[in-house]
Length: 261
Image (cartoon, rainbow, N blue to C red; front, side):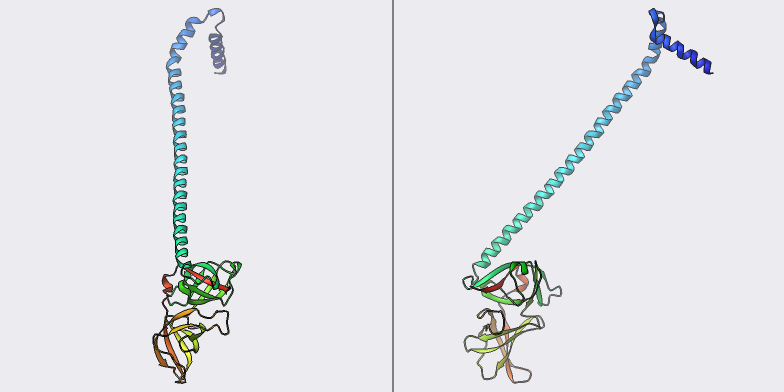
């Protein structure tokens, strides 16, 4: 078998080299026989190349499509962010126009979280100690309406205890009569002006403001209007149910009083 293969190899080589044209007839015959195979081989290789180029172009199109989709998503996100910033800036401009900025050094902050139980006990705002906010500082909204105090600060955020929180206690006064007391929260819903002397005058419709005594809270911040007057549980003092005009559940931003000007 080996000898046969060697002879065929030598014969094929002679036909290929074709010295002095001796094997022209045989070369022609072999060429005709091999032609269909060469044609088929060429077609297969050409088709494979076209298929490869086609698949490569599909891959390029997919990659370009992913890039375009990613760019569109980025632009949509950026557009939404800019619209939100524009709305926030418009909201702040509207609120700032109603604030007593000539009296107080204020720091604007957006609300980032609320009491999940909806009891009106606290808010979380997106600024903290790195913005000069201190614990105990008064927190107000438009028209200088006080809604609470900073209870705890972090570097970039703060917890605000609302006046409706049962643990809240703010010294207050009635400007009309000079009556004084302490405002506490009740069930996370109401504000109660307590510890008002029986001899002091307080009536429905009277305004209640901060007295500025014994805390970092400045005097004169508006808290609300008396809706009801009743005796305390021990009948030694008067209590006033105070209605705040502030809708804290709807407030997007607040202002922290950092000090007086």
